[in-house]
Length: 555
Image 1 (cartoon, rainbow, N blue to C red):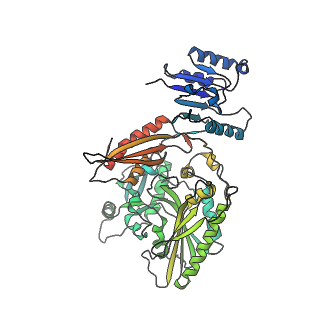
Image 2: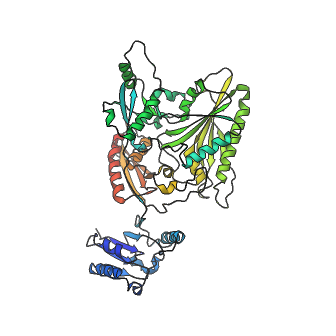
Image 3: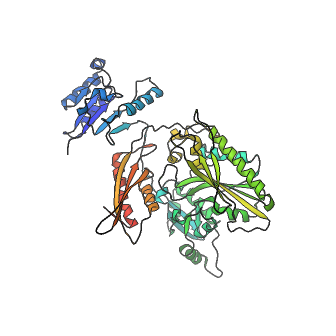
């Protein structure tokens, strides 16, 4: 194997180069460059000391090298580098953010012509990047009757199941800003009644109220309960808070009781028998309970908001956890068409106005929100076009649905309208956020951009996050089949949501055995943390182990 060649650009006093040279293999070749001339560094004792260290180790040093014009500094036969490092890229002490960003843009855009293009060669270091820390799945506890049970948070949702209070009054999160603006404007035409959302754990039977096309059993996160005998007093404050949430929730699940049965024995049988649990994939599961509640008011717009969870393919605008708002309206049957038309017209107007607040300069708002009637002639899918990602991204995205079909609900003189909105997706489209993971970040640089009640275009603080590519191929088991959705879910869980793309590369069938193999390409990239090559290699190794439970044989 040929020795590696490293190029360092934008060195100041060569301290980084001197430190790096001490860690490299003796057979590696390091070339350190800077923009200054030797005379500029003559009076810097630190720089002179570092230059001596470099030359003692045989490091080549070049002066007067402009990192935005590397092709002029190196002959074609010299341009074969395995890594190019630009450490702490900046123009000077008082250059300002704008000039530093321009420097980076020119470095990436102008220097990297075909002669310098090497897969994964560019590495950049930002001093304010957060370290990548693995999120551990939390254990939740719940009390049913006098028996405690516990369950493990699905790995694909690590850090998301526990409430982050994005929609609470004290929050300045943009999803709350969007939600409050929509609700406030709907309140100008309808009487409102806001409802409290419970913890998102459901018996399997509660999913039966969802209409066809909204509920897909394959996309549900199922939960397994285990009996828990741990000491309550040993719990941490954080766990206790989660436990208290569950205590309230399960009192509302109302499992069917059997006469003349011991309570503890009955609960155990119901839990391990017919009452399989899952995380809600839509707030529509509560629609029937809301309508049948004594406090339901016909003519009022009832509002329910909270997080929902569903398995999905890894795509830029597909998210396993998001916040949903559900509007429920009950009206007299002879007023249905008028009320429905008024509600949808007002909702379209509200969403259009939200989009125009951050519209790109020179862009025109042609059509943005559309209601696509479904084959049953009653329900609609709500589409929204993005105008904040430039002309290269012109795609309609599904942001919600309108349900007017019965959903197993029969009333002699009333009919019902249910409108659900994906608040996270609407927020992304309005703010111009192209990565859903940003909404769940712990990075304060994101929240600092969020002013309560105010909408401004999002400014990315992670300009050139590194990415890593790994391929994987495997043989299929003809008898078991292959679940691609579960394949994506495993990748999401193992990578802690750092896999941003899974590309299908091809299918191969062996000419003799007729066995079929598939090949995929995974791209890893963090949106707000310093993800390293070593960490990604470890994730890929774990992924290769985990997917074998999907009845595949690695090649």
